Image 1 (cartoon, rainbow, N blue to C red):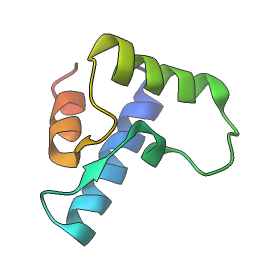
Image 2: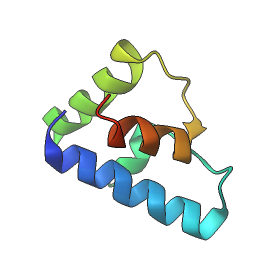
Image 3: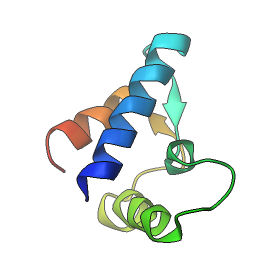
Image 4: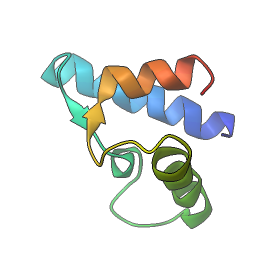
Length: 72
């Protein structure tokens, strides 16, 4: 996963956790604006989320953040 996406995931997870608490869930769509202005990056996130790690639609933000920080 490219560093741009890793940084974005960590940033969004940190904001969600700070505003809604440690139990907040996210989907990979949370890392993108409502307008699909970067389809390649969206597909990279979807592939990492769905195919590579077989995550549920919503996962705990702290779990996703930890996976990204550990290099998964």
